[in-house]
Amino acid sequence: MDGRTACDPTLQPMKIIFAGTPVFASVALQRLHAAGFEIALVLSQPDRPAGRGMKLQASPVKQFALEHHIPVAQPRSLRLDGKYPEDAAAARQMIESADADAMVVAAYGLILPQWVLNVMGGAPHEAGEHEADRPAAGPPQGGAAPSGGSDPRKRRSVGAHDFKWGCLNIHASLLPRWRGAAPIHRAIEAGDAETGVTIMQMDAGLDTGDMLLTERLAIGEEETTASLHDRLAELGGRMIVEALELAACGGLRPVAQPAEGVTYAHKIEKAEALIDWRQSAIALARRVRAFDPFPGASFVAGSEAVKLWSARAEAGTAPEAPGTVLTVADDGIRVQTGDGVLALTALQRAGGKRLPVGDFLRGFTLAPGQVLSGAGTSTVVG
Image 1: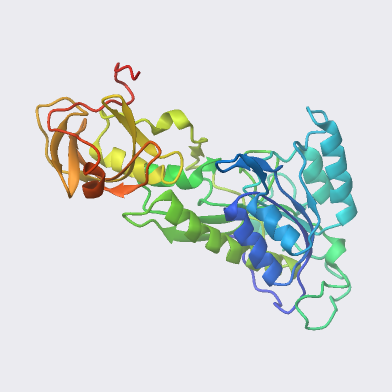
Image 2 (image 1 turned 180 degrees about the vertical axis):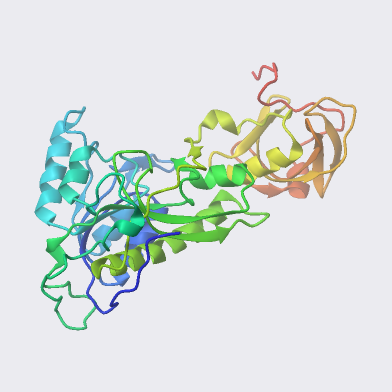
């Protein structure tokens, strides 16, 4: 259930601030720009070193903003009492000066402190009030009718600033499942059959705010984080445009998240990449897909670290210890796990390219009986 209600779709979009950093966020920014929203300010994380030369590179969101002459702020922190108070103070001045109706947040990477939520405002409702008892959030009743013609690139000249929608987050899960930093990875790793996007109204908690729109998306059997990310980014871009268009005419009602079904998508740590062969083949195959493209699953063969990019679980068992190579063939390197057999089908040596197993074996020797190292083993790599 989400907060869609019928409203007049001819009203003009709002003036917004956009906060985001990676490709997932840039897709939404592109959709908002194409839909004619007035984007008064973009917040993105500071430029980071990247590539072989480790030169400073602007984020995808910043690149789009500069290409379209949108003002950009890149504070190192938004905490006024933090390590970079001057950054936070400058950002606050820019946010207040923008006088926007809403802030859209998508994978920004910085925590929004309470002052940001206060400046941006939000849908007014009393604690404990049921969704059915709330009025439709939007311009106050009795206010002047919006005007400005039919050109979708013009803002509403009356009514837009009578109400602020606060900070709206594009979250890549069906809340309250997978609150937190890595919802796409964790959904695949857990073997979820579906996920989706929730447009939520941010509050002081971790992804605990009221839901505005939700849409479901099936997770394919061979889905990786890379492929699911792209589909969710497109879905999120379409949904945030719809949400703001509905919000502009009072067509959304905030809906509280259910108390049941809360899970947390903890940040992906590089240490998780090392395969634990004691796990089941099914769990390991899911983890390989979940960790593509980052951080990539890996194991150690002899003294060399190898990335594993594709694998499938197969039935069967053998008396050998988990991590033991059973067979080596062009259609897969079969390895015993704690439950079942994992066929490794795409691999990569350090400094090399991702290769199908047949091509990989032409430059790398593995033999039945060899034991591969990973998490939970005592093998020391020199």
